[in-house]
Length: 354
Image 1 (tube, rainbow, N blue to C red):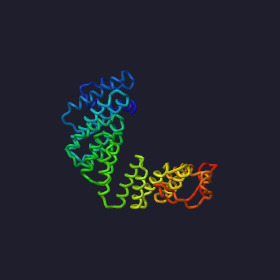
Image 2: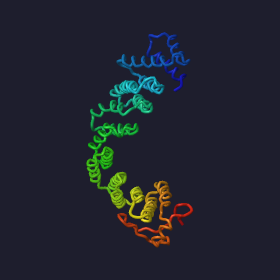
Image 3: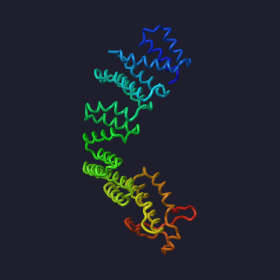
Image 4: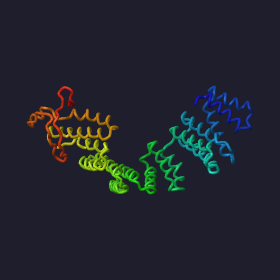
């Protein structure tokens, strides 16, 4: 917001809310601000006056006043004139004024819009912190533990602000699960517990998620998330097993096939030839993933370019008495997959598809 616009807004609100000031005094205040004379103290004084007015007003019928308080607070914060605590004070005051009116007129579109605008200003100001979010919403949640709409809203705000690791976020997800024991909510709790190094609870919630819905697609989703967590923990074989089961339940689950590819890629099952042969199978699964889900094509192709550069070389094949491409080959150890022999290109470093 530039100074001219801010100055005009100041003039309007000074006229409305400071009748004790003369017209010339109001003009002098705004002119001082626009000309940059003592700008900081001018804006801070203006903000303080607004907050004093808000404290002194018992009854009012103006949805724009609390919005203006939040607008000025957002500006002051962006100029480093007030801190996150004071911005939270302004938000609490402005939102409280609007909510008190919505109690009597819950469908008033002006106040609904004002509430949304105040939220938007606060969220975009950069002053919102994990602590401030908890201060704002914890009491509201405690008043109605079954308000899943509000709980989901706060979960979204916390995630957006980078607070998904906070205790408040975890407590809200627990409340959401208590209200709706869905597979999705159980998986979210499982993943949060994994992040908190609580594997026993994570396994419990994964189990609950699997039992929560009889749909094969939902069960496939649960197993896919479990496969991802196992892969992230370095448990390649377990990740492969869960992903295979997920794909068996839903043949369109290309993500499960991608996980199998990543579980195979980099596995050490023997000498150089053996370790490079796992990339044949990995690429096989990436191609299958593309066919199962076209939205994965770009990601799969990127990995194919990387993995094909790690195919066995002709020299490695020579020492195994394997000289021809296109022949079936069984990749052993825990992988146990049949694939086709392809050699790394000596010129480009990756296999040339024909």
